[in-house]
Length: 536
Image (cartoon, rainbow, N blue to C red; front, side, top):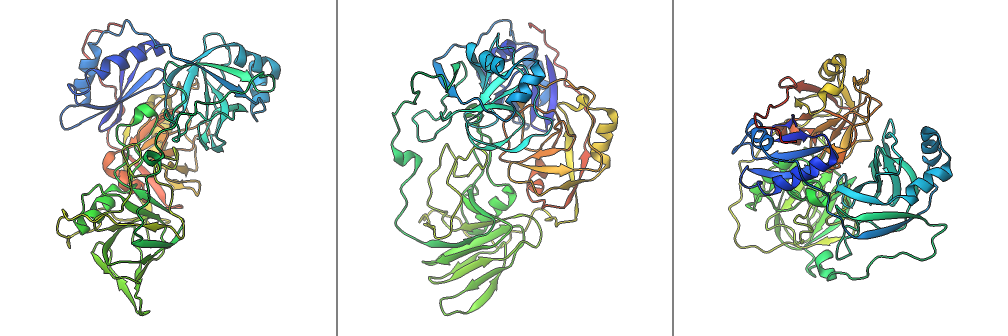
């Protein structure tokens, strides 16, 4: 085993085979509480382990894990799922050329061999499937696509998969299926689970229609009923307005990342201003432009990226309100947030909280997974929870970070690893010595960065998909970094050279387009050494 640094509360265990990975995953599930492990994310040859840094440390965990016996363990065989595919993917010819075979032979190899789901990740319902005899091992694209259509059937390395929803990705596209592999309206949202067996069939030659079970849960659990009370009506949403709280911590087994507010400090501060529990859901407003009509007396607060707050009363009187302070509103008032002066995201909270139900443990909307309450629309109404057990309002809140503006240089501390040694020494030095500009292709999934000189790899082989964390700095083949943020994919196949330290993640989530980032490593890249006996 190798024990690699990932972040201040995350380490990675690297093994020799998928079988060893699954065996160790099973063993770790029984020690989570004892060893203060918060989450385990298995992948092809690695396991990402998130732990409580107050109660344990990476070296202690490495010693514990090194003493485990992983000599046995197999993937449990599951049900057989048949997936019809229309083989007209835009990379199909390229795959055939790379393998030195015809397009027809690519389709034949894909349909003649049974696949099995080894693990899930990247996004909800995204299953990594392997086949012993398919001989369809192809590299990922040199630069990932910004958007791949839902249902796309794809290849990367030894794996095949189906993209559950439209998302970024770097896999080679060979076809598309009409079968939904992830659907929150189903009793079991994920069609494919670890152990599932999969047969792909050519849709043109299929002799029968394949469909999903019709059993559905009570719709109220997926789409909670809307309270008829309309305390607040949305008049403008700006670029994007989402409900966000702390996020879905601990849902990695379903292929769901943490998500949640990009600036958790501002989220917590908004709730403290109003006396709410600090994890109460608020509105995350991107680049201002939000406006709402108030239909009943309430107290609100705005935190995060600075913006002008204007209140227009029912008598057409206007006044300015302050951020990080409680704002008393009356029926008929209209509150408007101007454009951000710096930063990216502001947070609008109401005393008592919004009356919304959690979906898979959180009220946050995940833009990659598309899980949670949908983005707000003009004309939508929201109601407030009448909660009598609230704390007093706070008048002492202030911004916890200096919000950057376009053109500013933002310094982010980073931990080197887990794949720093996949890059040349020049590239590792270049990571911290040159500035990286935030491009317009950035969003809640990640910041796409551009530097004058790309980072070059020392190891050119394909990296089996492995777990990633918020703040991971992934380097695609084009050498231009992607800094993963809250809605990032759980697993990825491009090497991660380092990760932004936890205490700078709020700042990273507030860096606007055209600002520049300077990465500051807080130490050298060094493996942890487990001192136990290796039973592998």
